[in-house]
Length: 78
Image (tube, rainbow, N blue to C red; front, side):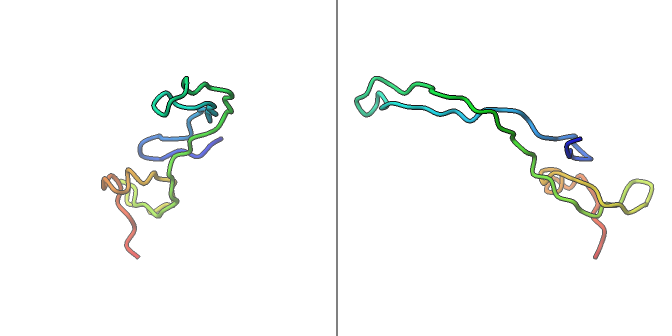
């Protein structure tokens, strides 16, 4: 099972690396063409941090940075 954010549920997403070839129209060519598409994964920016749950229990969880910056979690005071 892949890692996912405990708060937002973010996880990895499938996508492609696109390889293009040719000279752009802007620079006098006939335009670029897609030659190859290779599968890849876009991974969420997850950090493992100590979080205080609503029950008062402290636990280490995977949380995305967007949730941390937005203040959606309560960190354990070090």
